[in-house]
Image (cartoon, rainbow, N blue to C red):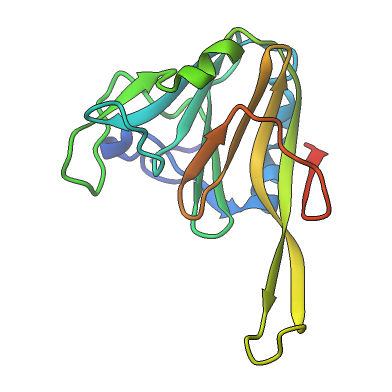
Length: 186
């Protein structure tokens, strides 16, 4: 059992110690450590891929910097976020609940290549307005803001790791800010 997280490492997922909590609570808990990556260079981005190189978005995104800890981000369910540090060994082949072979791959998506080596200028939480309504009462909408992503702005571009409905999504596009999307500094 790891004293830092109070859970046993998952040997199937390269020793990962998941720490899922509601996104806002997780970001509040990790805020000081997350702000600690500002000023560091993003040197590696690791993801799990299936045979043929397709990204397997259910497992964590691993970010390495020129100094300091390794950041591991993973989204699941509706707004559960796990932020861990230095628990994953990308040299260990990951296993999961699937039958096909998986492997860790550095910068598997060519869209990530331009931001590698970029110095983190700021780190933000992204959110979106989630609205629900009744089919029987069309104009009866209710909404609330949900945190759904972690955005690192670097001097070479952006990296947004977000909740893609029960798995990780990732883009190098700068998040939009409008009436249904927002961001705030962590």
